[in-house]
Image: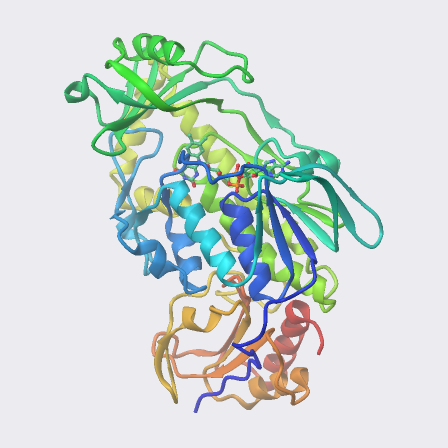
Amino acid sequence: MSEDRTGNDENAEYELDLEVIVVGGGPVGMLLARELRIARVGAVVLERLPERTPHSKAFGLHARSLESLDRRGMLGRFREGARSWNNGHFAGLDEWVDFSALDSTHAYALLSEQTRTERLLEERAVDVGAEIRRGHEVTAVRQDADGVEADVTGPDGGYTLRAKYLVGCDGGRSLVRGAAGIGFPGTGGRVTARLGDVILADRENAPMGMERTERGLLFCVPLDDTYHRVSTFDFEAARDPGEELTLEELTASLREVWGGDLGAHSPRWLSAFTDSACQADRYREGRILIAGDAAHTHFPVGGQGVNLGLQDAFNLGWKLAAAVHGWAPEGLLDSYDRERQAPARKVLANTRAQIALMNPDPYVTPLRELFTDLMRKDQVNLYLAEMLSGVTVRYALPGPEHRLLGDFARDLELRTDEGKSLLPEYLKRGTGLLLDLAGRPEVGEAYDEWAGGVRWAGRLRHVRAECDQEPGLAGLLVRPDGHVAWAADRDASGPELREGLSTAVATWFGTV
Ligand SMILES: Cc1cc2nc3c(=O)[nH]c(=O)nc-3n(C[C@H](O)[C@H](O)[C@H](O)COP(=O)(O)OP(=O)(O)OC[C@H]3O[C@@H](n4cnc5c(N)ncnc54)[C@H](O)[C@@H]3O)c2cc1C
């Protein structure tokens, strides 16, 4: 028997008052706006660029991002026409990290340039009614006990917007973070990267991938039939971070690091950045929150920044919606900071470790060789694949101990009266999911007691199903972001099961 009592009205209008201002329309801001809208929150994205940037920083999406996009029914669009690959690099070592060993339905990385990722996320946000204001720059932010205000300069002049909450998704130099008084401690830049999307006259002799020389590193990959992306990593010469990179500086750096400039010319994008790695000391100050690069920045080795930021948005969206709708249990919104600090700390640490291994100092070479040998061991290789793809992120959640508590719910195959489907199908609308797997009456009773017998709109669905992959499980409570908030085995005692579930439902979904 199956049951689905979400009470969601698929035809509901998305006309809502402004409740959340999202500053910054990069990938994180766009995804957050969509998460808020599917939770029936009125959200506007203020983006200072009048047009979407044509330059891609990031190239791809890792397994955890793909799993999460799948749980919102968005993965199909991301996969359409996009190549995937099984290997990644760690610190530019000769041995590749093998993503196909991951225990995931999506054991690969998807090639999706950041411009494409941003466009797809923007389209999905607009589809559900998010308002995107391009060419609107936030110049000041302040808050009081009841709300938050942003001063905005738009194409037609200045204005002030007021809402209940504001989220800074405005990148590493976040104005919002500064205005909220949130600290951003970390390590300063010691490595200078110079990046150019250029045409190489000497295309035939261009190296492929990452090359370490005695004077630094060169990253070189073809972007299309005409352009290459070249980046030099210079471990010695510091430069003024505010200064624009010129083609002359890039070619000089190529000659220094690589011994030749490969005939680089006609740049369509030039950018310089450092390995400075910083993390906000808190992600929330009252009614102001930050996410993505506004909360953490690091050197882009391993392609982790977008992925980390998208997980911030998946974690924050439903909690902020609960606060806006007034049903957020105590501490729900603060759990965003608590849960998302640790994954960012780990990413900063692994990027610092990679930089250390990439150092051209000959004393580092034996360490690289040793590490390369270690990577040939399946366990080490898997460890790195899991780390880079984010699939081992597990939150320390309260509740009765269980091997699945805090983990990301797998793609379980579920049999209901309506047929077979995978678990991600049930998370598409951004609600929580209570999976009733063993027909233990306490599960349904706890749900009914919580829901008060009413069809409840949009917070938690109750589904009865069978699952051969987890024959020992009585049930699972899955949060909208896909993490398990409660799990119990079939042989749990009745009172234990009932109480654990009731507490978990109240902790994450409040009272009706
Ligand atoms: C060279 C390079 C390569 C990278 N490669 C990868 C990779 O392969 N994989 C990966 O996962 N990550 C990669 N990253 C990191 C990734 O690009 C960032 O982590 C990502 O862009 C963060 O997204 P975001 O939405 O938080 O911020 P951003 O993308 O920085 O977006 C912030 C937005 O806010 C807007 N904004 C800023 N201030 C204001 C304001 N006051 N008012 C209104 N709008 C404002 C900006 O215009 C911008 O559009 C790379 C980074 C670099 C530099």
